[in-house]
Image (tube, rainbow, N blue to C red; front, top):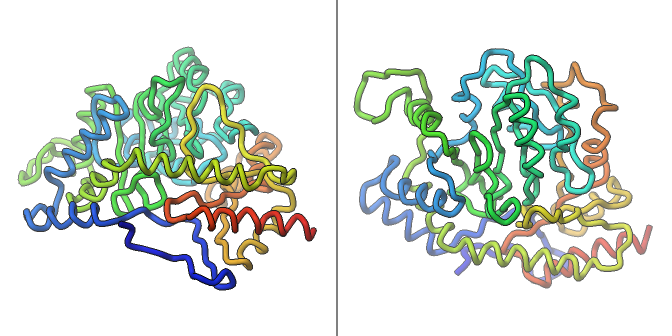
Length: 372
């Protein structure tokens, strides 16, 4: 049973949100059991949730935390890390706050994932790592990335925050092919832990041990005041893990519904020549994070959608143009990230959407192009 209904009965008052977590009685029951058992801090549910995710994605080790991967790589202050220019700014911020220098790489126009052909052009003597970001529910083409990393002796930190349920060449889950992989359980992800939180995974035991120290104030266990290393507090409370555990148990259903919604968008937008879906690449399955489309007259379409009660979101602003990073980069080096920002938008795919909602969204888009 879903707790929240947000669509009004009259079309004129319709409000369709970009994001709406699929939270129900199962999550409430898991959280309630944590409270009843007096597990407020990290405990048995966090352990069970971690094990469930690791078994599913096929990684050996993992800790419930996020954005500390760059801190345990053993890189030096000022070392360069290659990051796609088209991603949420948190990818670059994680590297910057670890003392690394983000160097941006253009993406492919077909799917907006990092372009392996552009990676090698950005490598210098100071380049020490690559951060491929698996965007919008498809995997980066990882074989060329792995080949480049091996050639230049580079570390790989995968940002798989939008990649849960995504497998490269049907065998390797996103986040498990590099040295470290990061997952997010934010509210808009396919499974959430109640709003915030994430996970770092690895198959490297030494990196795993570093993660264990770093996430717990530089110690392996709480309750002791001797701290062999320097660290932070990245632990996840059991109540959050409880939400994640309930979400994991119905993950197959969540994935199926999101794919159904995607297929309905394709059905109801068929024949609209002004709308183009991102290409589905042959080396990866597709698990929609959003419904991302390239459209004509984006600047006019966005306010038209909002006026008709549909919350809209355009795609990522290029990192090389972000005020905090804009300095040493030439805009001509990033034609595809700029194209994405100027021409692409995200449509909702969450499970609160009904077929009527999706039909209305697509009908609104059709109406716009018929009148322009």
